[in-house]
Image (cartoon, rainbow, N blue to C red; front, side, top):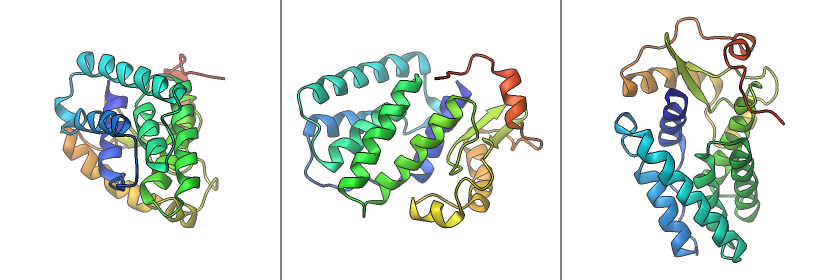
Length: 204
């Protein structure tokens, strides 16, 4: 579960606290439970957390079908629950919902960050280079920044989406590795190397 663990750490390091706009109280509670379950990344029991995550996603779907997801905050809360999903379709829904939240409240930093992070996770889940540099992973050698597509976006684009520059992201490797009691991978894998070692990646 190392990859999932580091995605959790990144969300804790980078996500700006969600604003308190009008919101559905149950969606807020689901979001808060999702975050509380990840408050201590090194102590996560994935055998417990993954079934809990699935239950939260199922309930969000029920609320969506009931028309309960209305405000920007609602969409953000739903998006964060699905950002922690296991399937590509979960992450796609997270991206769609965070994009709606950002459209409804473009001034909110958290919504912008999650839109970028969910897009990066869509790409990494399919073993494509990420754009913004929000996704960190690990292997037997330590923690590394998942490969970034050169020129896909600029550091100015990253700042606009409330994402650290690539230089800042590399600096954060030290913090993430320290939190997990790991080293920084001195020779991080390329995208081609990852594709060779992870043939079961989710595709279209």
